[in-house]
Amino acid sequence: MNWSRSKSTHRRIVPSLPVAGQLVPRPLVAGLLSAGLLSAGLLATGCGVQPAESESVVAEASGPDPLQYPRWETVGPGENLDYNQRLSLVQRGHEVYSKYCIGCHGEYGDGHGPASQRLLTRPRDFTSGIYKFRSTDAGSLPLEEDLDRTIKRGLARVSMPAFRLMPEGERLAVIEYIKSFYADWEEEKGRRRIVPVPHPPEDLMQPARVDRGRMVYLQMGCWKCHGVDGRGEGATQTEYIDAWGDPQAAFDFTRGSLKGGNSPQDIYRTFHTGLRSIMPSFGGETLAAVSGDGFIGAEDYLSTAEVAELTPLLAEFPAEAATIFNDMSEGERSQLAERNSWDLVAYILSLRDRSTTAEAVLGPVAAVQTGADGPNEEHRIDG
Image (tube, rainbow, N blue to C red; front, side, top):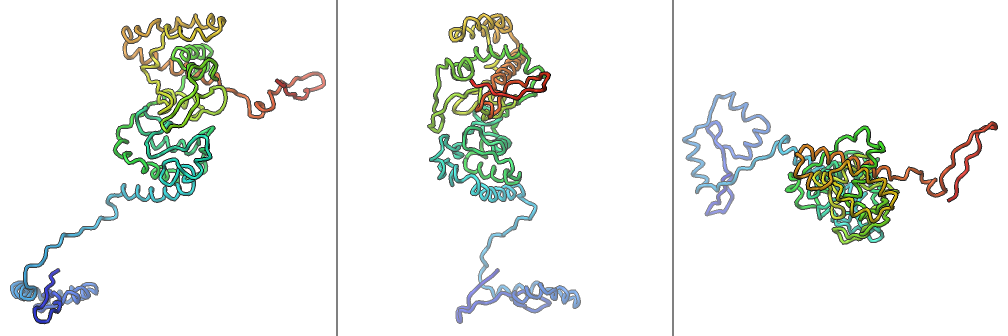
């Protein structure tokens, strides 16, 4: 649009357009266009614009060359749809976060909410990008599915409740908002490596597999943190400091829900991905390297009877770790690692206390005895 000022009067001259041989001010042209009268008039009279005459008149009225303004283009409603959808989710997620999460995790996602000072286990700091519960390798960010699983399940033995009734749309929205606390999420998400979790074998809880799992547990040194009995007996390291400076203790496998989940797939995933900053990941190469010479260090912490019971199982493992990497093919090592993984899962599951909460508090219930006079009353065994 061309604007100039008159030297004598300093009045603004309204630019004009030539229409049907006559100059019509642009504001009037806009009004005619909106009313549909201009186009109709041109078609009815057959008159056109006279280029030569109009150009000379316009140049005379406008003065010097007009300023060149950049051309503005608008984005169509269907363009940049992914960005618009994510922005909408983040905005909605902020509302969900403010309602359910801000009290513990804080306004800035750093874990310093008003309630955090009263909690034994500090809430997660989302700004660091460190997550314990993932289906990715130890150095990767979690998948959105992992965050969704944590929100739905909650975390046992800490103050993270389960939001099972939260609508899926709200979970997806708050996940997008949580991701925004870590500045490098978009850059690092492409480097995530998923750790596959296969279906458990049909013979998972067979005694032979559980016994081998006991050997895997001992030879891999799990007893050094969790004890030879899974509850801490004989453990050589019992306290840890996590990435946030908070003290942590090794888990007692015999009681309480596992934070990463209690199913065979959950336990398998936890061993293979680790709990970042607190427990290392035990990948395929590590789980394949279970050999007889690894049993030597654990013998001192076992009873003579158990050593005698476990010694025959050594024949089912390579005698030395060097044999595994020098004499086995990659496929053979992979099969051995898979077998050892599920053996270890079977053993951990065998340690789980199956009693109910009432039985744990009041004592186990004795079996009901049936006699000639009918079933006797149940009675509890005090121990």
